[in-house]
Length: 221
Image 1 (cartoon, rainbow, N blue to C red):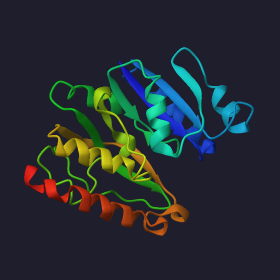
Image 2 (tube, rainbow, N blue to C red):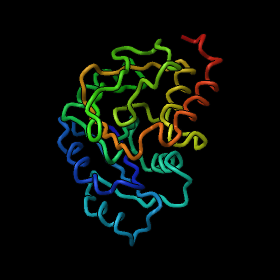
Image 3 (cartoon, rainbow, N blue to C red):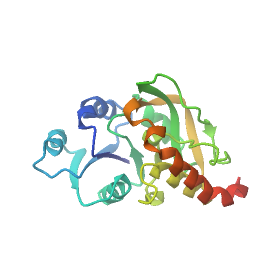
């Protein structure tokens, strides 16, 4: 079975769009952990999420953390299963997403999928597909965060590069020689917000810092 982590700080208004894309998965052996970060139990954000709770969906107050990385690490404590998938609240899955990924569990450690942008952009990220174990991860972030399925034992997010914590984790696992695969079919829709565009937040500088940090491992490929 798969533990799906959905951390929420902002974006509760998108839950009504993203949650059904989990419920309609053709593969249904999963649990969903919704972590409400920074909003107390009496808040509107927490209460909106809580109304969806049932035997497969659990809502937790994740408080006193310093960002998404620490929130994910806290949520991981509630995950029951050996594989973890991530879905940002403003993104969506297509119905066969998990079903297509599980067939690669025996051979790979981190499994993503192809992706399409929507919202303020309607195009596609330029990421490699198929077996990307020997792809040079320093060229670009090759795994879409909301597409990932990975072994729970490999999870653990560093709070220092928060906002680009996903890329940091992929680089760390790539350095360790883990095996990566991207399903060629588009199974994730990633929402683009112009008012929070990547460069506008200065995240490109954080990416440059990560590349500098891991560039000494480029001979691993």
